[in-house]
Image (cartoon, rainbow, N blue to C red; front, side, top):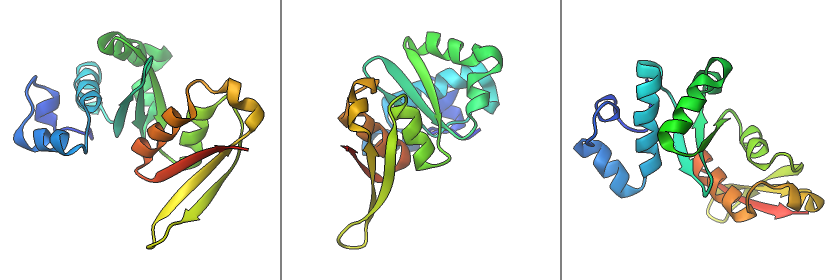
Length: 160
C-alpha cells in the first residue's frame, strides 16, 4: 500500500505527528487524507495512489494503477464517489503528456514544449488548439493548477 499518508493514519480517524506535519507543510492536502481513508476502506491494503485533487465538481485521483482503483465494472470508483460525495476521475501518472491529455480531453493538444528556466530549472508549456477552448471541461487555470500539483513540475498552458 502506497498512499500519501501512512497505513496507520489511513485506518484511523486521527493523523499521526508525521502525517500531520506533512499536511501542515502542504506536501499533502485534506483530500489526500480523505481519499486515502476511503480507498483503504474499499481496497484494504491494496489501496495505492499518489495524489488527490479537489475541483469544484469532482475529485481527481492520480495513480499508477488506474485499473485497480476503478475496479471491475467501475465498482470501486462508484463506491469511492459515494464515500467522498463527489464524482471521481482517476488519471494515470505515467507521463506528463498522458496526464495532460486526460485532463484536457476532448480538446486537442497541439504540443508540449520543454522550457529551460533561468537558474537551471525546467518547466513545460502545453499548447492547446485555440478553437477547442469551448471543449475544455474546466478553466485553463484550473487545469494548469491540477497538472502542477499532480506532476510536481511547473506547467503553463497556452491556447494557440
